Length: 198
Image (tube, rainbow, N blue to C red; front, side, top):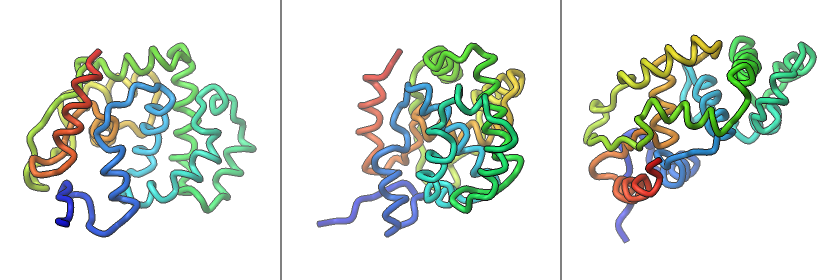
């Protein structure tokens, strides 16, 4: 049986990475809570590898109350300090505070996770965008859409939402299908995306 051909960014024989690539990356996500989670995890990745964040995701979910923005918005210094002592996450003070700040920004936005989902998807014209990548060098680090998303989120009070972070987020949650032309997941994700048109 031949080995599956995956995107060039996915390291071979890394079970955690392969499972993420095969089951999650690029699949359109409409759940507002999960979008909020992924936006924060992409921010936590800044300056690090996604593998680091992926390995710590279960701990992130536990420590940050399953990324419930209403609960996180109410955090005081005590839970923030406790989170910073937990080796299960990336103990960067700015990144930990960013999760709380982002939760408060979402609450100020109205706290409606469905509305937040629709807002984020508006930057992809409400339709998963299909790209045609071949080599690792073909993958951009930003786009006009991620620039616009970054500017808008910052204006709302979000932090750790630069354009590069927003583009990685858009790839992860299926706003763009960046599976490479030879990747076995490209067409299944493309077909799935067609069913998710708003």
